[in-house]
Length: 111
Image (cartoon, rainbow, N blue to C red; front, top):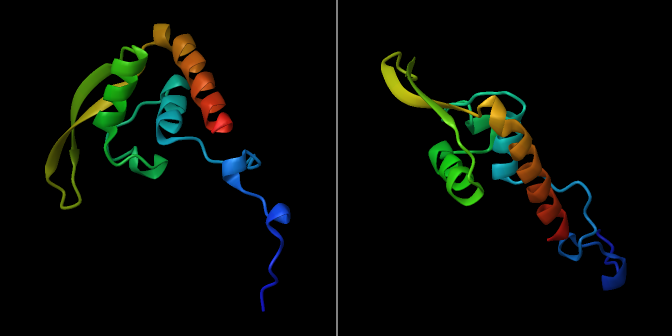
């Protein structure tokens, strides 16, 4: 049987007490790219992104980051070619991306 604890003893992530909150999807993608990684839409799935092109658009339009975009063909689950875009950050964007990443992480902690 569960014991009920008084409201004052229960912690709530909305009160800012959680220190293990996961970074946002945008922060995870940006961290990967800022570390020199590249991604296509299927490789972004394990990072929790199901629509990478939208995430890249947010980072480009709201945060003014410039991305390299390289079209490529990869096999789909049936072995047929599938056209995707591979995204990366040029080296000149890495320091700005890290600055944006720090801001995103700070906002997550404040919420």
